[in-house]
Length: 518
Image 1 (tube, rainbow, N blue to C red):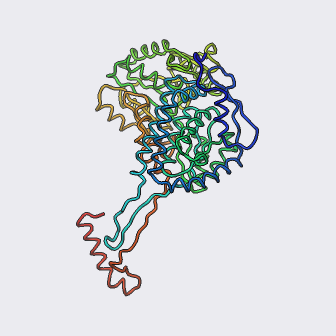
Image 2: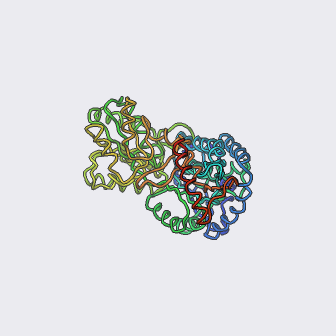
Image 3: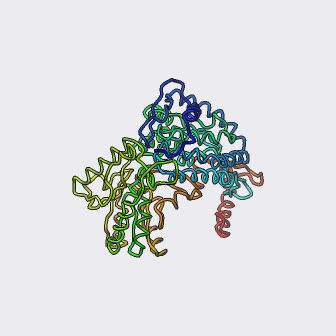
């Protein structure tokens, strides 16, 4: 049960989905994980709709870029305020589409507001024009400016639709770009409601267009047309997008899969570490790119940690009511449930032990599944190295810090990692040794994920490029260098002129080195 009347309603769903760029009558029935019933009918876009949206966005982008940093800052800060004012509606939509708890939905709303505020207040400093040192001081003056790339194509998944949309769309807008976004069916309402807040704040309608539909048609068309591509999703799909971007010679940022590791050292408080580990692994039921799937526990504290983890998860309340009353929610789709059950069945058949969980809970909703911890996991099991992306974590015992680091790094992925310890020095040393784009100390993912001023992304098979921070803004612009002569000295053009001036230029190079001028 949803427990209270949702702010969201069929009439609202219709108003939001009217904003999808879709010229045909075809729709897709989108269910809610809470009950499995149809939540709304979502229009389906075509490849022609994508091309039309990109064309309109290009025209809108010209005026938006000319509007300047101050105007864009004003609009984005107004959108920030609307996000906070409309938070209850946004929370309802996130929960209805994803099945997560209200607390976990709030993380999305808070993140979207933080990303918007950061980019609004930082864009001018990062992207404003600036003077650069000339190779021949007093002979040339040089200035660098940034040119918006144009239309960014953003492909956003269902799992954290609201915050992931903000993390790609808002810096593109702050940089002076337009956006055409492909929303996943299961997250479209959240994205459309977020977009509406920005439109109401002053973003032109055509500047941020939303399309929906199958990846084979709509996603392909968008990656064929966009001037820059942002993708969040599987490594397999990310490779295809990278190949296409490479052929077109356009840039791309790709946040891909993860098999994220958490290291529990021998000096922790086992009960406290276990409760934090449970959240790190099963927030959003593990359906988050930075969720923990591998837990390496020092054998000195393994027994009390394991007892505490089992106890914490057994006592946890599952639910997706539209209020703050559940610890963990539902898997988002039937496909997610099928994947979790397949990984679990494969592991158990090959000898793994279920420490806690392991049960489908249709009494709570069609896709609820108990948070599950396995031990005895071996390399021949799918769950050992493949990303499960939901409801299963594996527990391993290790004999010390070095063994834990080696085990954590023995993965094709490198998105997120965590280390739990009371020693700040040990934590920093291990963080420096872990092969991951972000590392959290005494927290699973929220420290780095919420640090919107710092870059976020993966290494190895976990992606390319970075979102957030200055890097998140710079991906949407091309640097342009403008240099002009001062007239003080004419550079050599003929053989005779080189004969007389080469010595002077060599002397200049030596002087610049002596005075430490780069």
